[in-house]
Image 1 (cartoon, rainbow, N blue to C red):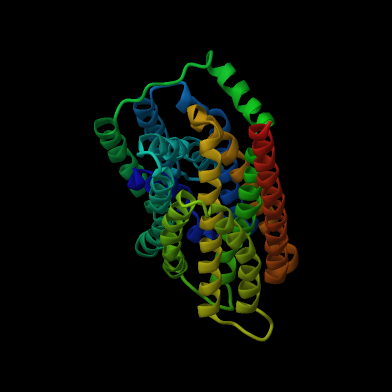
Image 2: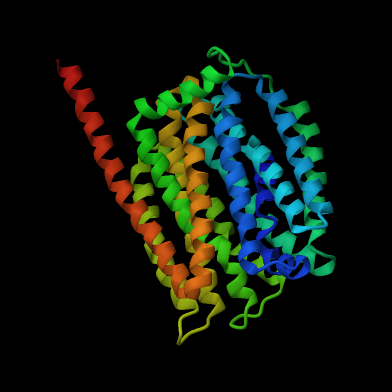
Length: 392
């Protein structure tokens, strides 16, 4: 399941080291090419909102197989795209149906033994992170030896193989009947109204991913520019610096099982602020240092995984019978934040260069830290209410 989530989501990151090459080849501006990151995230968010709740309504093995095939079709469109408009359509289709990964994550929690759900989620999320990292690295390397279409074709082929494997290896699930598709969507909205910690954790994840998406949407232009002059493969290799964050995902899951998830979240939220200080320094007016940039990239991935995995291990236990819908609400907010961050990052790059980008990312980091404080208060208020009810 970890491999499946990695390959499914990894396809959304194929374009990141290729943005400068795509802009030149298809005759569009860097800002337009950067919008591909936003398109992938917006379409992924739509899929989270409209498709992921089906994980509580339909048999999951069959649903996952269909979604993976549809995601592969989107990548085929990208691989054959003769124009930027066609590439945008293919990116949107692939993004919308790659939400199969977000049905796999709560499925893993369902299959885990009692007391080990956090570890299971952390393991699957480690696979997701490694997939995203390898997608960037392999994509850049393939583009250097061929052209930017080839990485999309490779992902499409891998997804078709994955669809066969999932259909044969996953156990059948027993769907929860909640009155049909529209009733399922309505119940997702009701969960948001009824669960205050779902709201705080979703906002926390959204602001955290927004800050990191500011980096994802702009780093290619910085690294390919005159300061660093890296090739597509060189930019892709930078992503391997985040491999250590896969370990963070697993450790965050174990810490959540041990009751220390709240402090892991706080540490991750605080680390966002440090991250942007390091990233600004890496390309400041008096310093151009690739190792410092790599350190900042690593810290961004570490912070995001600490926050994200601990968030999921707070959200899933809220309603164990509605994990797909909880994940839909959480991840929709998460990727809405990512889409916002990508758009803000592209605008900041055009208007303020790298300094503008770092200020935008830092602003999202501050918001994430403030929401964590609010969540801490919400958790304590909930505990007091439970203690008062027990005493009564």
